[in-house]
Image (cartoon, rainbow, N blue to C red):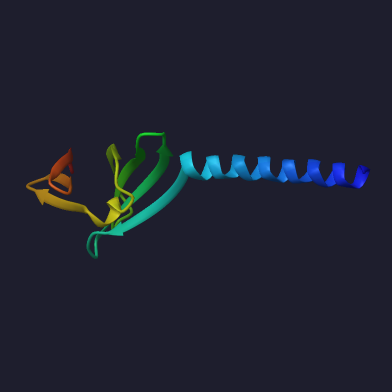
Length: 113
């Protein structure tokens, strides 16, 4: 009888730990770093924080642009709702301004100088 009780308690403990792990994986936060090579001279370093709730998924991303001389320019941050956001980021230079675009929305304009 005691053996069955121990097996039941261990099983309940394992199920509870698995439940907590599933909640953590589903709702976050989880962290990830993404480097997007813009051209031979520039790389966009992105720090992503994944969070979710019952209604939506959120990717909070901080953007830092590094040039070939290792000069870093903090472009800012934004919240995105797509898990493949890094494939949709486009960086454009207009005069001495850097504009990055996500899909068709301009997210941030930052001065290079």
